[in-house]
Image (cartoon, rainbow, N blue to C red; front, side, top):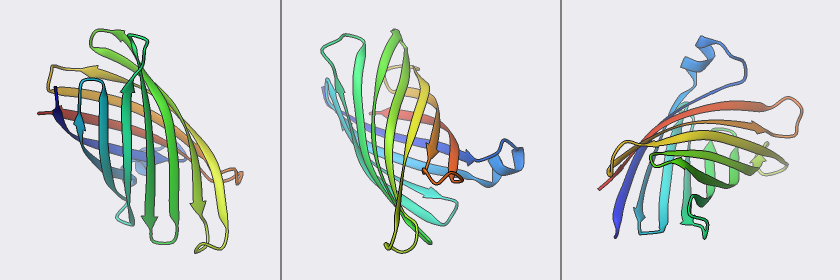
Length: 165
């Protein structure tokens, strides 16, 4: 059965844990896609700190294991002074009929000075997804990104709601 996916996520990023930092870095992301019986394909876009935007493409595929789903995404970001590229790989594991645990890793490439030098890095993420009913699900995720520069890193907390129609 085919369903259309529409989601909205609210993201906050911070390098130190303080309420001012959290509130100053609230961002929004939307996804739209198509979900078939065992494959979901989606595109996403986001607005971040009013300084840039990201676009991407992702997919989910049910595995041969009953409770495991593979996920992957490729994203490109355009900001005031740099560009980003990220490849995300992960999975969802169903621990209860309505609850999935989420985990993933990412490889990130950043243009640090107008395409003359690039910095690469990694990210790890974890979270939980709750299926409210056949049309709605909600998730809460944490993602850590380090650019291998020794000083540039971020912590991201993402809360999202998905609607299937």
